[in-house]
Image (cartoon, rainbow, N blue to C red; front, side):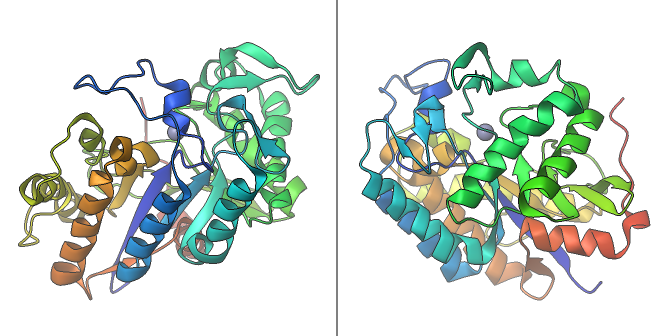
Length: 327
Ligand SMILES: [Zn+2]
């Protein structure tokens, strides 16, 4: 392979609902400002403009029942159906061209009771920790079905928080079965783990059985954009310092470069809230600067890839991508 894959994981987007506001421990930023409670559709368009300009590729979550306030097919409490549909059409027509779409389970908040449509008194993360493949499968299938009904072509799933980490083998089997049921595919991917500070950090084949395969696409860097939520500093010096965490302007330092030097693939991560930065968009500007630096310093050495493209690449030589040890 004459290039190193680079990819960007985007966690927590949903139409209009600010998913982070719905589940945050505090409704204030660390510097004491009230958290904004919704995200305008214009922010999605700003995001797409940046990713299209620099050819950024990766994975993009769509939380199908954001905050448990309805769902993306039948309507979300507090917002006009037209606004939800407009957001989804931008994802379908623009985001989906360069990002692999996935659900991030159903609410990223309280667990849905599939029996009666109500909610259990625990969040999805806590609930998942004691489940089996049999009970996780319909839950994941429901989330994939909502995306399918919304006209989105999901190719994998993302774990809200670290959903399923305690029962990962069961979870992986459930993902494969649910994906096959809803989309009819035999290969899919999921995002759960991060491999920060590990040498040779790469995706791995988590399941390869009876012709069904699941690839784990981990983050291999930290969300450097997160800090933008907690400041009103939008100066170019600040934005440059945030980008430095990922890649310095001379292309010689930053976490992404350290991952590559250690033989790994830089799979970057940002959350919708990090990029939105409580309405200031500072994180998105830092992402743009990161992409500009990658283009200026690494073009020819790295290639932006979606999660699905990474999955295909791994499955060309599954034996070369064994599961790392987490003991
Ligand atoms: Zn999340």
